[in-house]
Length: 491
Image: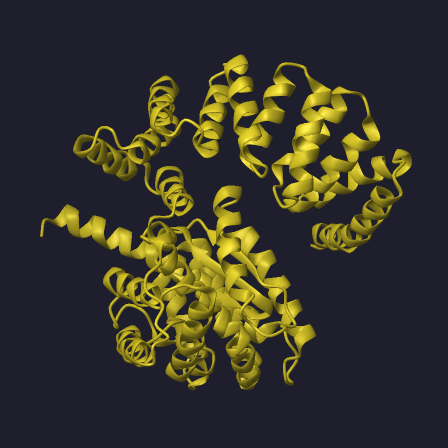
C-alpha cells in the first residue's frame, strides 16, 4: 500500500480510536469516582446519569433534529411499554458520531450513534439495538458493575483521570493509554466491562421486548452483523477494558439459536412491513445527507439518481446535501422535483421552506411552511422556521404563536426559546423576553448569561407559573456561578 494511503489510514484509525477512548474513559471516571463505596441505590443511579449527561453535553455533539430524536424516542418508548413498571423514565439520544456504537447508562439514559442509525435498513434493526440497551438498564448491569468496582483505589482513579485529560487534550493516545493501563493493571478494569453473561441476558430479554412490541428479532441479528463487519479495531488496538459490548460473534450465534427456538414454538414475528416505513426512510435520508460526510453523501445520492432519476427519496436526499453545500437554488429545484411525486409530504415541504428561508426568499418560505404545518399536527422544524420567517417579515405576534406552539408540543427544542425571547424583545415585552432567553442560555450551559436574564425577568414577570420557574432556575444556577467565581479567584 502506498505510504500516503497508510498515513491516511493511520490518521483515520487514530481519530476513531480517540473518540472511542474518550467516551469509554469518561464512563470509567463517572462510574468509579462519583459514587460512595457502598451498594448503588436508585437515587445514586439517577444522580450518576445526570452527571454523565453534563459531560456528554460538554464533550460530544448531540443531534437535536426533532424529526430524528422524536422518531428514536417513539420506537424506544414503544419497547419500554412492554416492560413491567420501572423506577426510571427512559430517555433516548442520538450522538453525532460515525462509529457504530450504542450504549446505555444507569437510570434509563440510552445513546445511539448517528453512524449506526444511518447504517440501518429497517425499523426492526433500530428496535433490536434499542431493546438490547433497554435490557441492560432493566437488569441494572451497569449499576451492579459500578458497585463491584468500588475496590479501585484513589491512585488508580488518578491515573484514569489523567488519561482522560491527556488523551482528550493532546491526542497522545499511546501515553494516555499507558497511564490508564498502568493505573488499573491489577485486574480491576474487567469489573467495569459488560461480561458475556450480561450480553447474553440483554440479548435474551431484548428479544422478548421486540416480540411483544411486534418487531422481528431478525433486526437485532442483522444490526449485530453490520457492527461486526464495521469493527475498525483489532484485538491489539483496543484494550479489553474499553470493549463495552464484547463477544459479537458469540452473541450472533446465540441469537441464531434463540431465534430457532422462537420459530419452533410458533411465536416468531416475521420482519414487519415497517422495513419500508416511509418515516424510517426519511430519518435515514436526513442522517446521511445532513450529518454524515457531505462529500460521501453527495456521491451516494448522485449515484442513486443516476440509477433511478425519478426516485423521490434520492432526489430529496440530494437536495438536502446541495443545501448543506450552500447550493440552495439547485437544492430547491431537487426538493420541488421530489414533491412532484410526494406532493403532500410535510417533511419535504418543511425542508423546502427552510431552504427558502435560508436563501432569503421569505414570501416563498411563508407559504411553503404554512402548508407544511397545516399537513402535520406535530412538525417542530416547520413551526420553527415558520416562526423565524414571520420574524423576518415583522409579523411578530404570529411568530410568537408559532414558537409558543412549538414549545408546547416539543419543549426540548432549545433554539425555539432563544427566538421566542428575541421576538418578545421586538414587541418590547421585556419580562417575557428575558424569561425565554434565560431558559435558552440555561439549557446550553451559559449560566451567567442565564442568571442575568432571569434576574431581569424576576422583576416583571406576571405569570405565577413562570415566576416559579424563574426562581427554580435561579436557585439551580446560584451554586454553579459561585463555584466558577471561586475558581477564577484562586491562584
